[in-house]
Length: 272
Image (cartoon, rainbow, N blue to C red; front, side, top):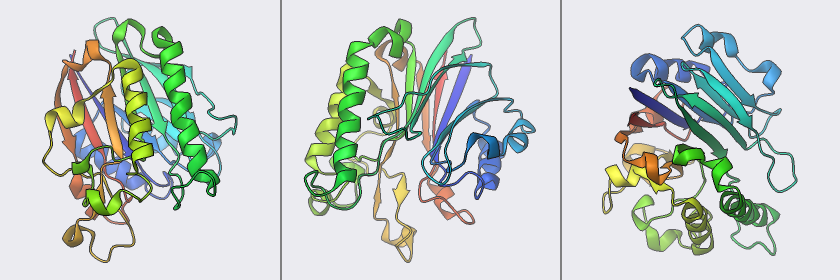
């Protein structure tokens, strides 16, 4: 039975709830994972999504910043909303999703810190936080493998705020010293991926050297013409489940919707 999962940094769910409605109407993913909801749980616009059939909702939000959410048409069970780096930011939530055949798929939804502008942890606390966050993810996955990906049936999605490959940015050379594509970040993200052998299914289906982006800056006068994007949003699947992923879509057109997020949705389908 197919299971489709969308991930999207929505950049304020209350401001852009109509865009989530449009995503649901046009693509009907079974599960929608949102990042940067910027909304306390009590103020999350649950009702509009429940009316669309997403009656199973798990939240980990805070006022004005960060925040992650899982909206599902399938039964889900909360597992953990892990605090990272002892800061208390709402950047992770994990649920078990009914796979439709009597089993479960563990689903992690992450919002990794952006890291500020200066790629030097000695002078930029935000960048130091980002690197520490990656290190903690790596250690957690390695130490608690069975809890993170039980029976090797797990999916990790989210805005990981790193474009790891040369073809994930508009200019590899020019962005090597720009936060999100520096070697220390891409190497850190690779350690996270390798800790559980996660499979980057987006790049498996759309391999390099094809350029692929999920984020375009609001600062660009014409984002489409300039096309100076980065692939910051990811779908990783545990090795034992990765072969089930038979379709991936990056909805580039969503960057041109009314009052858009600077990120676009990524959807992966698993034929379980």
